Length: 333
Image (tube, rainbow, N blue to C red; front, top):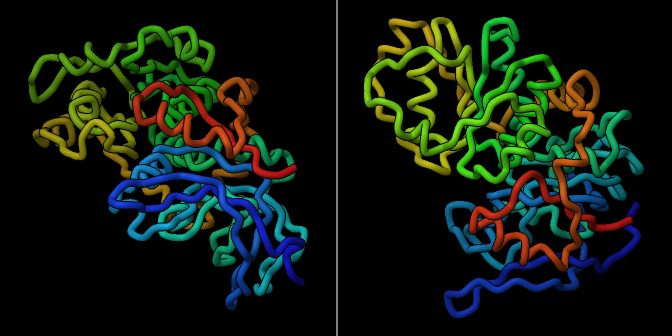
């Protein structure tokens, strides 16, 4: 079965005289290869990788013109795979979507069938994109952290807490009964973070200026770090014995300047989170948790809905660090 429309709209990035320009263009669908699906996209969402792609970052996207969008949810309109049928509702995130494969900022995506996850029945399409890769990453982090750290063990800390992964991590942990300390560089967003479930706010400058010692006073039972660098170093050094910290980002720095003392004297565990290539069985498990036991009651409060025409404006704000929470893009009805 062919998709209903042979022409569709997409947010395109083009390289012109070493500059990167964006526009909404008409695109033509192409025939499916073996084991591919074509999805009519209903919602996408905005992520930092999308902003980097739009900016022409060759570490994210090597070739232009290109359609960004590492998240998409919609309905399958064409399938060459036995795993999926026409009409199935699916989520597609990470892998190569929106990086070097045209992504979710378009009315249609064409992707390998094994990239798709069935949309849980208790999750709307919009909810799925409020979560998106950020929610999946937060969920992966929570899943691993909760295997080693329980609510009664003490406070858990979340860095980059006004960002997508951070805000959702705060909200999920609060839903599960944890006492959450939120780290932010934006003191003005304290009310936002407390609304997500943070019981305490720790300013970024304060944790960056902790004493430069191999070990610090134990403050946290565990943590979810989204930024790397000095903040992750100090979270690890201030984690109590047998605590655990997850790491999923490097916006502050990819480098760590640590001794092994937190690991060999306190038994602290550092857990890496790779959301791009996370195994499908774990993805499915996390999505099902996000749709049930972990579902955030105030989920829509974390998100702003926009159209394709507003994407460029929001990306510029994201690059300036002026966005909070999640930005969802409504593509089609």
